[in-house]
Length: 189
Image 1: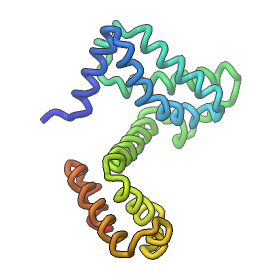
Image 2: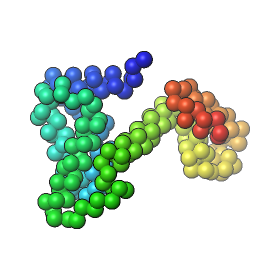
Image 3: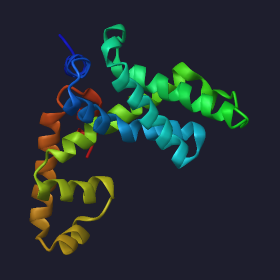
């Protein structure tokens, strides 16, 4: 069984390789914030992180014809950003700490990508919920508000809060059926 993400990634790469500017915008929009956060962990400078990510994405566009040599676009982008961030630190003659928490490339990057993808999957599922259900779910399950307080804030009945929360959980279970960790977490709510 093929992973949906890898099929999507392959089609994105092939369209980008063909010079599809709209596909580049899709890739830019999908990765910019993630790559910025990743770079910022290294350089701890907003402007530098923005420049690094923009430079990496520009390089991707300029070298799009060579994408057939890249096996995984996401890993490629994270590696480029990591290397550019470390280069920035060297050029700025800033001390590059070699502790495992910050610079053990493979382990830290892999863990960051997994966490970021996990959050991305959940937030995408939340975006697909009906607005009322999503709002009740966020207030109840994410912010930890009590039913009574949610009812007052949204000006709805207590029973509506309960039913919207239950509906949100059921819809999320359906959307996230391929992710056992979410099934477990949702069943505990």
